[in-house]
Image (cartoon, rainbow, N blue to C red):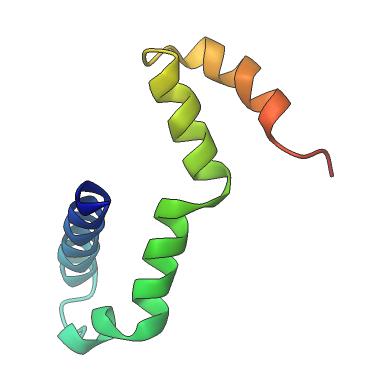
Length: 77
């Protein structure tokens, strides 16, 4: 859990740096509003992005296998 928190902190720092590069007038407190932090946590801990990253890691970084694995993991809509 500590590792996940560290990755999220780094991600927030990178998002802040990119945003400041694109929009220099952006305020620092924009990044610490609850919606920004909650969105980052949700993206990291759930959803198809997480399942895709898990499948990628379990398959040793082989993308071709990830495509096959994800088909069985994602719900059909």
